[in-house]
Structures are given as structure tokens and as C-alpha cells.
Image (cartoon, rainbow, N blue to C red; front, top):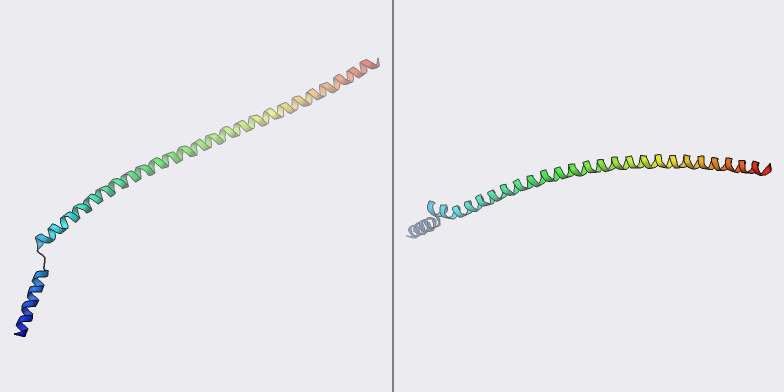
Length: 112
């Protein structure tokens, strides 16, 4: 009888541990639904991230173009400033030369 008792107890334990197909399905369905919702949200977030990345790339291109344009304008302004400085120096040299000639003429006029 001892063997019979153990057999009955074993069968009862095993059968009570078995889950029915419907029970498992009822437990899995909410989890699967949550997984589907999370997958949908993940897909949406990936789409938004891709959109942000493309906008960021476009902004980086605009910044690079603006920097190039600013550099070109700065180079042009620098060239004009250098040219103006050279013309001013040349004009100052001519004015100095004219002043020296005027001074010599004045000195010659004084000697007569």
C-alpha cells in the first residue's frame, strides 16, 4: 500500500501542477498585448528619432554653409581693409612729399 499511496500522491501533485491551455492563454494574452503596445511605441519613437536626426543633419549643413559664407565675407572685408590701408599710406606719403616740396619752396622764397 505504501507504493499505491505514493503513486496517488504523485499523480495528484503532477496533475495539480499542470496548467490548462486556456489558463496559459489567459495569462499570456495581457502580456502579449503589452508587448504589442510597447513595440508600437518603440516604432513610433524610432520614427521620431529618425526625423530628429534628419532635421539635425539639415541644421548642421545650414550652419556649415553659414560659416563658409561668414568666412568669405570676412575675407572680403579684410581684403578691402588692407587695400584701404595701403591707399591711405600711399596718400599719406604723397601728402608728406607735397609738404616737403612746399616747405622747400617756402624756404627758397624766403631766401630771395
